[in-house]
Every structure is written in structure tokens, then in C-alpha cells.
Length: 206
Image 1 (cartoon, rainbow, N blue to C red):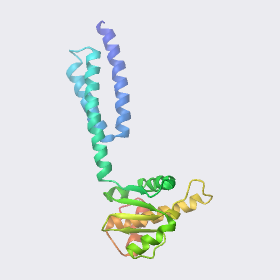
Image 2: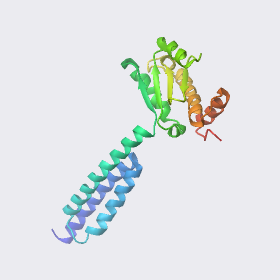
Image 3: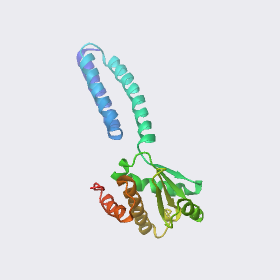
Image 4: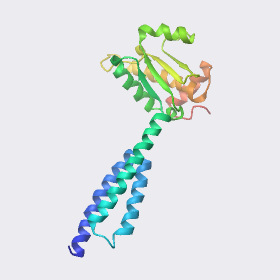
């Protein structure tokens, strides 16, 4: 392969790898940046002395090692830093997904830390009220156990004719509970004020 052909192969290789790295960076920003930096390093080190195939093998080996690190980082963050949605029965799968969607839409949720959200059956909700000594009918947060219980009736199913209205009610209730959690406040009025800011994606505790 002459130098002109090698340059053409390198150009195609560069484009291919850059596209892959760009996709990785969009999905996983921090690991993606490291991968891009590593690829640039490999190009600078090997492009003048090695053929394209060797460079590709080096780059792929580096990417595989970085991918493992990225997966470990994501697993650590997922288990230690973000909310976990727990369903008490398989029939609440769709409600669990809806709750996760609401939580993911709030910037304040990232500040909640390792918190558990439990979708609890409406017909057994009195058990929660009795255990926590509350009279609420929709949602309640236990600060000491870092657990929030959501009445399953609060979460609409996808085929609910009043889905939009009930989904908005869910968003407001979740924002209220996040107000308790993120700002570490007990009075309902303070949680309401924090919820208004959370709904607007503003810092809730200022």
C-alpha cells in the first residue's frame, strides 16, 4: 500500500472512529471525552510510524478498556447516586415506568441521592398510613429510611382517558415529595414552596 492509499484508509478510519466516539460521548459524556482524548493520543503517537490496521487495533483495545471503566462508573452512579423505583407487584410495571419518567424530568432528583420510591397498592395503602402514622392519601416520605411511598392510584395507566390530568397531578405530588427530600424540610408549606421551584426546574432550596 503506497502512502496515498494509506492516507485514504486513515481518513476513512478516522471518520469511522470519530463517529463512534461521538455517539459514545452523547450517551456517556464523561467517558466519551476520555475516549476522544485517548484516540487523539494514539493518532499522535502512531500515525507516522504504524499502518492503519495497527492504529485501529490499538484504538479498539483502548476503547474496550475504557468501555469497561465506563460501565463500572455507570453502575456505581446508578446504585449510589440516583433514585430507585420499586414496584410491589408486576402489574405495576407501567406505573413504575411512569414514576421513573417523572423523576428523570426533574433536575432536583439528582440531588436526592440514594433514595427509594415505592409504588404501593392502593388497597393496602392503610398499612402505610398506620405504619407511618399519617393520613395522607397520595404520597408520603419517610426521611429516616430514605423511602417515599406512592399510592398506585396516583399513577395513571397509559390507557387512562384522563391520563394528561392525572399525570400532571403525579408530577405535582412527586415535586412536593422531592421538596421534602432535597431541602430536608418537614413542614408541608415549605415543601410546597420547594415544589413550585422544582416544577420550574429552579434551585428549590434558595
